[in-house]
Length: 402
Image 1 (spheres, rainbow, N blue to C red):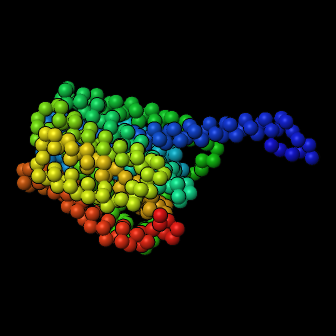
Image 2 (image 1 turned 180 degrees about the vertical axis):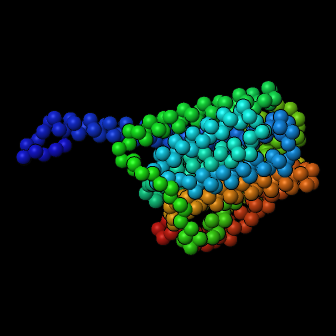
């Protein structure tokens, strides 16, 4: 409403209401595009893991080489986190475009260009996930954790789509159609995001790279940093190798698809529960139970569990992992907002799947290779018991302890 010379202007009021309605529509379109993009990153983070049995066979690779695929992807993701622009929505569009180019080229060139394309794929993931996370966490401190859990819920929904793509790849023995499907999806997301960007009058005309502030090591408790990066590393390692583990323990399409499906379904379930504010606080209260679930399930995988036991272990692993990263990340961002934690998480996500492949090749046993995430889970539990519960005040800024 506008007051003009002491009189009420009906026309101006209508214009203002129309402007508010238009602004609300723009905000809704922006939110939808961001959630859609983050759902797509869930597909991409799980994609190479579920396609790995096909890729190892099609490209004639051993587990060490398979681990290098994930190393390249997650190193690229860390680089992507360093390349975030101050125009965050433009970063989202560029990241989605990079993923589309990488998957499209992989579909046609395969192993011959796999190394640079996997790196580009990771850069796109890092740009997209970091930019969307930073955009959506700009809320009041009490709502930030819930928002990040909800955002990662959409990620889990995307990851749950991957077994469908995996089924097609296993039956055809070729990953091309699955890769092209992802290409089309991210080309569309990039287009929608660019359309939103073009309508954003507040977007800076001079987009520049925002480098992470490495004061994170002075501002954030080191224990909280370690817990955050360990959670992402364990999740990346489990998601990368579980399909291959299931395929070898019980050859056939059914269990190869069922094991990662259980993993992502468990993760989706716990993140869905955590998307409710009251439940999210309860999940933080009983965080050590989730950490213990991760330890028990990874130990079960190391013991070469198979059949129904493998599916149960996968489900428990996913359920235990679900709330960890969103809760830890929200706490880190109450200390410092920036890309440093995303870079560190990407490094952990690169190293642990790669080390799993190295150990697996050395011992000729993928179950022994999974000692890597299992050891990480034990360390994470110890950190949780000694730091999160008994000294929570050191992990939370003043006013954040519930």
